Length: 324
Image 1 (tube, rainbow, N blue to C red):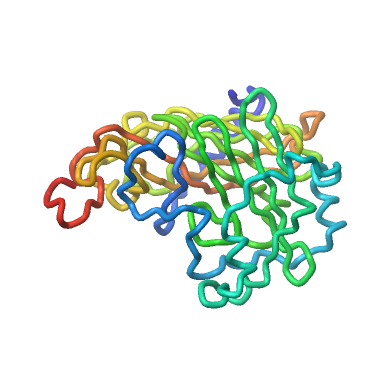
Image 2 (image 1 turned 90 degrees about the horizontal axis):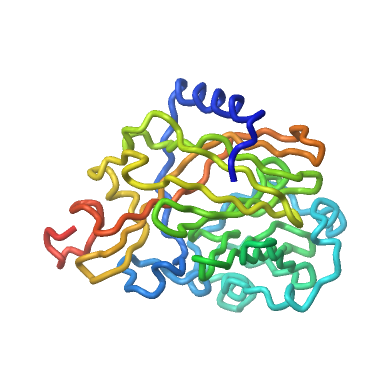
């Protein structure tokens, strides 16, 4: 997945101009869902399972609800008949909470109006990858209010993003789908992240330009890392980012404590730690004829894993003493 040569110079130039203007740090983002690589070990952070944790407040509503016909007109995959595989798609437990009698005690009034539109659920099997992407539209007061996304496959037991405060949030509304797509990424192995971007009809390829961390205090690296290029299949592009290691990103160990996401190993001694950092890149959407149909600056989480993390980079419980 390398960048198309004709767009590489343009995207690098945009990234460099952005860097000269100075990047703005984002607030801390919180824990991610557990990938297969670490699910079997002891998780020492209080990362609640996606199927059970309740959000504290609803994400900002990013646009008005639309009719089903307006929505299906945006995504061709929604216009094909629903299959048995679609109906078996994994659904995060948040939607059960939103529809339960206990919802108002655990969520905001708006979240309690959200209902999964089961006839519109679609699962996309990305060719030659082993990954399956779930698209879960939901309604509010009878109209389509947004889409949640799930991802399962090699190295990812389950991963989800939607209208809840947990892991990666996709706010209600469809404005992001139209302008930047719906993005979900995950840690796969040391140095490797994979993810998906859901895009509207008319997009044949997604190009991610050079990737740069927004929090400059955590890195000594000036040059961005390589981006990626991914073909779109049924409105879904699967991408891979490489080189996301502490050494390659020149991360400052003393600054990593606040970005710790999860880990595995003993209670006071980890064998693997994963840090969640915010990155930005310029993204291009290409039509089938190669013409650029959209250009946007996006920010998204990247995950950096390291074995036997340095002292001070993990927020161990106080009973662990100076171990962390």
